[in-house]
Image 1 (spheres, rainbow, N blue to C red):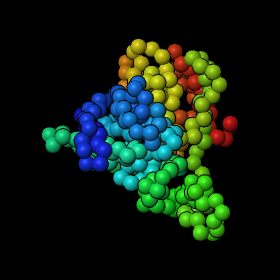
Image 2: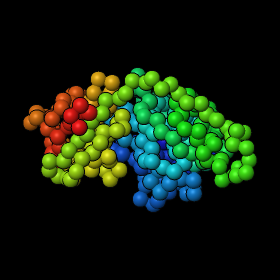
Image 3: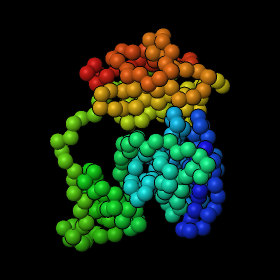
Image 4: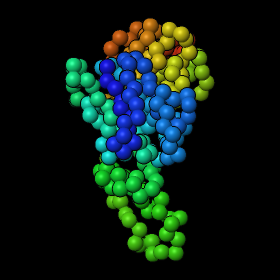
Length: 264
């Protein structure tokens, strides 16, 4: 299994092995698996989920954002040698020389915005600026530049506006919860780990039991790990399956109904 090597500048602080089927949390609070004592790091800053043969980094709506290889991300499939920047610290994701590295045919997931300090603004400019949706640098510079000509504020150009809309959908609780969950992100996790997007109880439940991926052709439910496998319309799911409108999903004691954008 791969490891994370925690560094500050060039100094190595520690190593953290990743395990298949187990999530790893990163943040300033003591309950995290990787604790980073840095005021630029949020209490619960990010997590790494095991999905299939790979691992995905997910930013937990942190204040200062998470970066992979100088790219600002909200979700990112990790590849051998990737460097994660959180605050002033870095985490290098790597496999040992004896391990077989999985294929790298996955693509980055949903991007986000938010950053602070000149170092973060520099990283944002290195990250593909045409993907930005607001003038982030100008927004964060306002307190320091009151009274100055706003025309001199750095501007990050907007991206194309004729982008095809993503599919929309949501899950409605029928049992084991209340209300509904909008599937706005490209990657939604279900499991007993407290950082899962949908927390499901049960000691046989996997830390990440299942995932729902938003792809151009719709939403795909995939079993990840644990003794409890999800069911769709009373059929146990072992491989990825595309969800249809009004499908009934059961994960342990939790029962949900999927609805697509056309009906919601």
